[in-house]
Image (cartoon, rainbow, N blue to C red; front, side):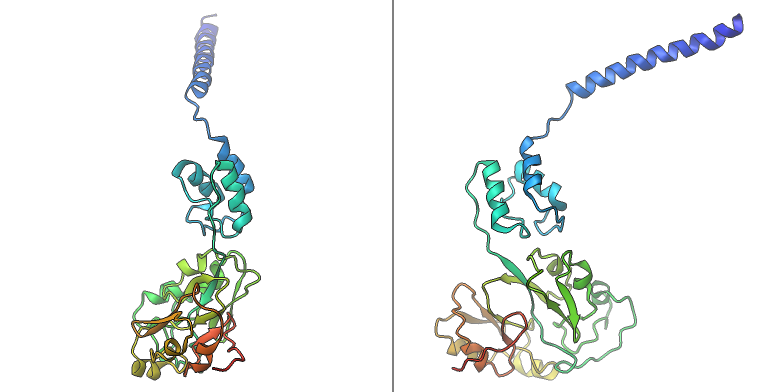
Length: 276
């Protein structure tokens, strides 16, 4: 009998205490519950679910919370574009913010034929890793694409592939999320408006004589494009031509005047069949 008391009474006491603590926890979960704004769920449902991070937040859940709690802009989802921005604005009860559709662009034409390779890199085949190692880039031009395809591996939409040592963008798949841009250690990849059909495919700020030594397709800062632009859409910034897409009318005169053909008409870098 004494043995039963020794076993049963502690067990009964533990059961009672467990029930009391459980009840207290249940009450506390109700009293101290953090109520999530229902708009977060509505915005999350409106988002495409790509979780690419192009909005600057860790996935769609993070962006939905950011819009409601941080006041993030309603047009940050490049995948969803204007329709999603409109839905988010309606949920938030604000005016929809205009979003410029963007696309990735490769600011380099330094193929092995145009820009010689000076070294044979034998390390990790990752552009970011190679960029941290002296001599990690095998190319003569320090501004050029390293060519190991890190951008291809990080693109969440399969919009990039490697062709002749350079990334190629599939415009039908590119959403302009910017993941490739943030992972390019040479800033070769950039975002440009989708409407921009004339672009400068070079990233070098070296002066002309130096550029000619390392790449036959680089911008030499001669200024012929700017001088012949009928709408003054081109300026020369530190020996590199820069085109204002809001002024450019796509006439193609700069393409035909560029001596190195680094000014391209479309992502495929195909010169326009237009003359000055």
